[in-house]
Length: 59
Image (cartoon, helix red, strand yellow):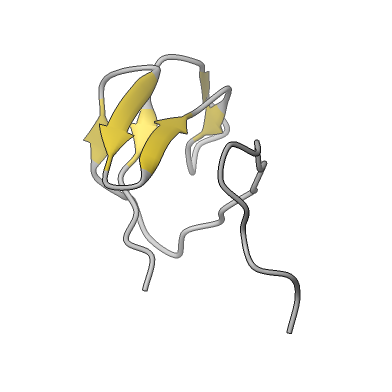
């Protein structure tokens, strides 16, 4: 496995969903353990947004 995530570090991820997700209508969202920021989101129709966060569940 890879290295564990470190506190106070910035990580960038690309997440592809299999269906249309719920949306958080904000550029960032405080969550347990940190903040989610979304710089760009492209929907299934190819339309790009920079002020929405697709709601995801990480397990």
